[in-house]
Image (tube, rainbow, N blue to C red; front, side, top):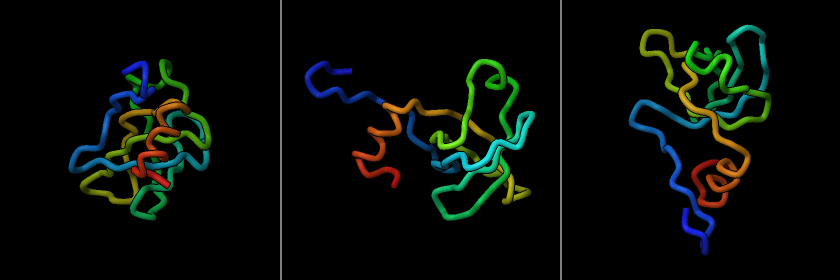
Length: 94
């Protein structure tokens, strides 16, 4: 992070990933997300993130939709509030 600009290098989506916002926590390791393409999907929090990264409603996350069931997706990354604000400022998300 450069001190004068305050900009951080953030993880950006690859070809099969997209930004999403968590709209509902369904318990366990499932959340409902509203994806960048306008679809609502059931997001699955993988075990590597389940107890280490807390995901709440309103969080901006990076998801990878399943190839065989488009209505479901894996949560790949959660952005902090500062990172989400930077993504909004740079025009990556609304």
